[in-house]
Length: 458
Image (cartoon, rainbow, N blue to C red; front, side, top):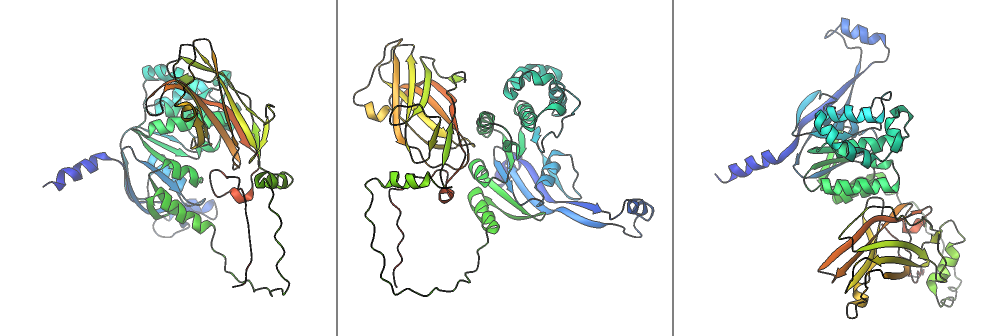
């Protein structure tokens, strides 16, 4: 008897259920074959069948994030269109509970002749909002999209980035139960992508997210489970980490050895060179003159960004400096830099803490620190009107190509029990333009103190 309520609860908790779904298209070699097929229906076939999707079954629970991966042509977009109701399955059945918002191909659902504002009304109405709800959410939608006066221009004049901004803004504010995203984060600047990631992480707390991407790092970071589609069929379903690893293994098949052993030299091994006194700087001197150099472009401090907290502290400046005190606009991964943060106390503070956090394009926390441990035994109080200056000196990691952002915050108290006075998202941003081939196996590369390779006889 006890299993029946559990089964009923699980069924109620399921928001997406797909049972043996398939989608078949009829491919005609010549236009006139379509007319012949209509005239000779059932008696002769003038087409061939192409199954974009076949025998796919899965279920998604409320609050779960499901990823979908696969090569181009594997059936991902077809599956999304079935879930959105823009396509009907040829075989099988599927059901989706609640309001669904989707971001598919760029511009899907937009009338290019309508203005951005008119498309907001149109799309919000299609997604189930009445006029009163649209008027209530419109200021939030426009603020999120942040495309300024272009909101009253025809969408056909928009760039791809502006179109996805508007589409994401609508989808984010229709209070959907299920959100379907297909590569929408591939377009947009670093500030907008970070804004989207903050929204998605908040949406994951209650909503159901269906996320499709070729970026397996993003899938692993966001998703609980993953579906791997291959040639229209479900090849594997399981944890995000395991399925993505299996998928990547098929993209880089193991090459057969096929190498002949070279003849060994009778010459004695070379004498080891004397180790440099500063191995990191020695390696940097080499890397800086090769194609392996990791160039990071640093952008100016952004004081106008929004913040949350008590408001007792305001960050008024932040910058990177070199060891001589010069303000940096470029830095090479592995070099020593100092992050200087100037904060103004608006109230008296007994034990202030200043900290920073570096994030990648997906909002993943890469590294950061704060002043608490250094001054836990000897706090540095500040009175209202005084400035606090925090300095963090470190070797900049080697970073993969992409955009990065720095959050800066101020608090008071202790590490485990403190009051946040301000937290600014994306106050500093920087871009990695080139990256060492060798470090491409992780989120960051750590400059090695020493690397050694020796060949020895067995």
